[in-house]
Amino acid sequence: QVQPVESGGGLVQAGGSLRLSCAASGRTFSNCALGWFRQAPGKEREFVAAISWIGGRTRYAASVTGRFTISRDNAQNTVYLQMNSLKPEDTAVYYCAAKRTAAWSTTLDEYDFWGQGTQVTVSS
Image (cartoon, rainbow, N blue to C red; front, side, top):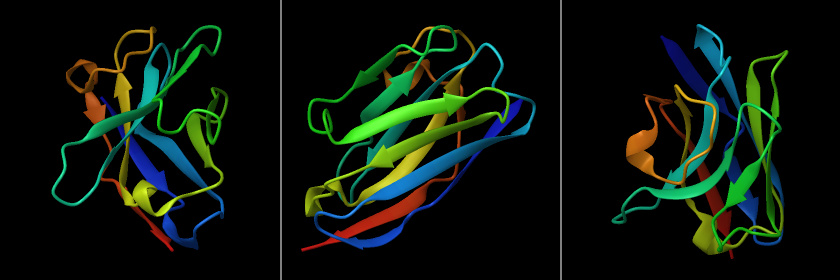
């Protein structure tokens, strides 16, 4: 099975940018849709962005539309989340997830493989 491994989190000031990466360990992301989710302290894990395997179709949560961009490099088995104009409310642990089928989904339960998460902290 594939194991997503996230990197790129850190501390940034409000208005700044970060790029998260998620690489496949074990097997590849071939035929997998990929998603980013986040979980803030005391809150449930929530959908952020997703990308399909074919065609690179994307979907974003309303709270990040226009600020975040998800992309994937299938040759490198890596998915990225470019985060611009960061806000303090974006502070959370960000998780990369892969689902066995090609179409993206916003539903947490449809994802089969999860990374350990990377902390993003946005200071005001």
